Image (tube, rainbow, N blue to C red; front, side, top):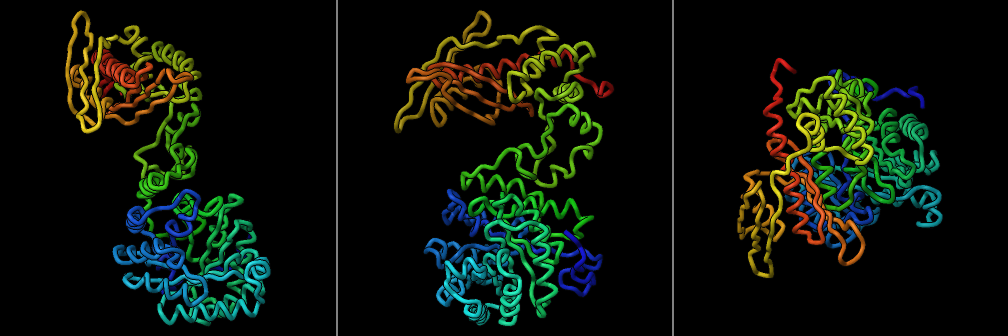
Length: 537
């Protein structure tokens, strides 16, 4: 890729450049249109409105709310979003025919700022096999579509579908004609994710150099991720002069998806030295909206996804953790707080080193001598080979074994009885053993017998916890399989993990809770003897 083509003039009077010479990039979000076309990603009206409001809060410049002619549901969604969402331009998609365009405008009537987005395929493949039209017929159809949209709406975007595979001479002709007809934004899609960054740069460079009226419209890119290059191709388009990027939250969309909004925005921000651009995105909202979309669609993202993945700011390698403890810039190019995470996560696992373990021990309130740390570290490595993730409660247990032997079995289960049914408040009678004494509590509250069991354990032990994770799985095979319950609870800001196994899921839950409660009580007892003071830190 070269940078021989000059970028738009860096002068204060240029509409996309501020006084400092920084170019403004518009973020066109199509999560609700192209993103919803992802298999399994359909949303109902209520869910679309939630995502639309979150996108508005995020600061997107344009929100493509749907394809109104596609279905009554799509029409209703565009109409409701137009009526209720304020801030972004609300956009409706339409093919280059009167029915589509009129339907889109009808749905957009109540928008504070509206845009009609018309499209028509231009590549030889689409002309021959899908449309069966000549080049001249394509241009005539595109012009009529744009003119129809312009007669209704001042803001009109034209997309040359499959532009990345369209002959460059013909693409220039189509773009020139669309702008002459009144299009204010010209979008160049890589519809099938076929192109490369160098080719994308060259395509935008050619449009800027060969289309005489190109300065009358905003240039936009819309890249798919079939070869994993959607973000890279979008960035190449920006370098070549594009001022709008079309993208989706989490990169969802047709087939392999679209350019990921969070990734391209943070690339522009993190590499401001290279791109000299800015966006209106409130980046601290990236993680929350990513999780909202996952929850609504059920389409989870991989743990190691850039920017918003669970591991994006997690470090397990001992070398990395040591560097992070000394200066976070050694292994992080972005701050987790800037995208919506609370902090960097130094994950303790088999690749972690003593420095990270010592740091976590101090966070948990323990001051270990060099000899104690080495012993705990040796045991930690053994445990890490058996478990994928090490929780704070595991660390505490190892420290306790070093300082005072194994964790105390403060509370144990003596007996329990539960009752639950339709239109009946669940109840549990629980008896726990504490030393030589037994304590019994009957609880009639909660959403079910498991919730009631939680309440009963809390009442008897006096240990209040917040359940952060609750999982049940079959530990063996068959109808009489053992049920393994794993919970993660939080107590006074610290996380604890417990596990219980039984053929009865309620009993498994009680055993699990007692496991965690005993860790909490034992930890408090030990910590009171080894509390770190400020001068120890």
